[in-house]
Amino acid sequence: MHVAGKVIRDNMPRWKENWTEQEVAKLRSMAGTMSLALIAKELDRTTGAVLAKAAEEKLTIVVRSSRA
Image 1 (tube, helix red, strand yellow):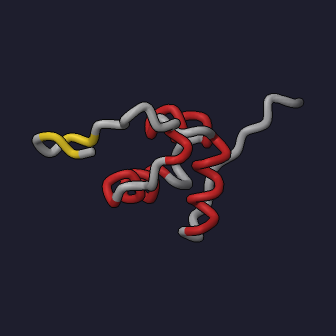
Image 2: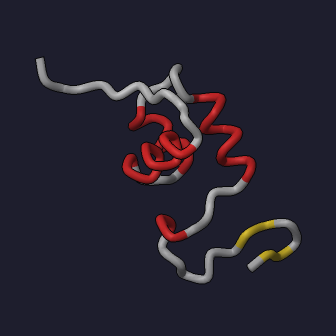
């Protein structure tokens, strides 16, 4: 639902929401320069959703492992 230019979620889980053009543009600008976790936090998306969208857009995402 849109109210005065803002999207109101109607209690829909975030992972079910479509990506906006602004979110995709932000993802493109952060891909390859920020870690997956930071991108997900910035976009308020799960890491899985970010990886899926990045793959769809053919973007490279930095994935850092905590294992040594």
